[in-house]
Amino acid sequence: MQGLSLVRFEGRWAVAKLPIHDPLPDWVHRAIAGDRFVSLTTAATERSLIAPEGLIPLEVKVERGFALLGVPGVISFSECGVLARLVGPLATAGISVLAVATFDTDYLLLRESEVERARTALNAAGIPIV
Image 1: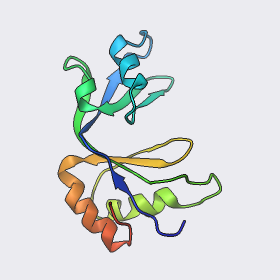
Image 2: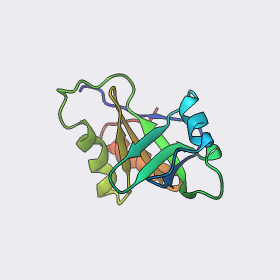
Image 3: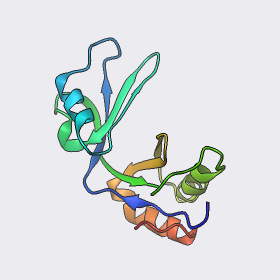
């Protein structure tokens, strides 16, 4: 993939932990129905939701204060190494990342407080945040 870059999404993001066996609460359905990035992941032992901070009630177990970056456009399933190119410079800089992939592209969540250090590390690797 030539000219790899990232787009920063407006706002602050959060990762919530939801009970695995309970029905999804109404606020989750409202979050999913919106037009912003939301990711609901269910595994055998957990259910997690990534959404804008303001959509997650205070009583939910949650980690707040993330920035969301995404690769613009569509990444072909045959493309190799995109995520490695993104997270490598961040790992070298000591910046923790939560990566999420969709059918079309990849997203990174990192602490809001780390955005400028991430920008520096990614720019040095030729990957601008626009």
